[in-house]
Image (cartoon, rainbow, N blue to C red):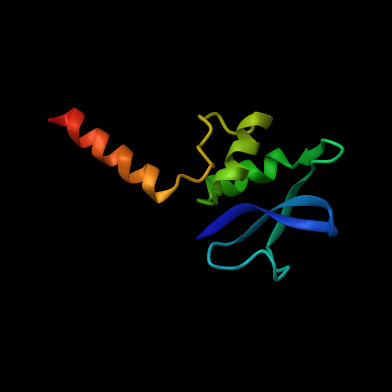
Length: 105
């Protein structure tokens, strides 16, 4: 299965990111990817995407990571809701489960 995800490039303390297509189990840190699909520089807010190639790979079954999915929704390439990316602590997760169970009863 293929994934569309960000990989970090650039100098120390001056990160920029590439949007790449990789196998799901492959790390992006090794620098091996199938295709560069875009880029994002958070310092200058500069960004660019190859919308046609992204649409092509999604049609072939590639999935976007949560952060990449939200980026593509913001750019208007994907028509969907954004996904929650923030981490939820285990304690908070258990409280949510308990609250949901009490509501169901």
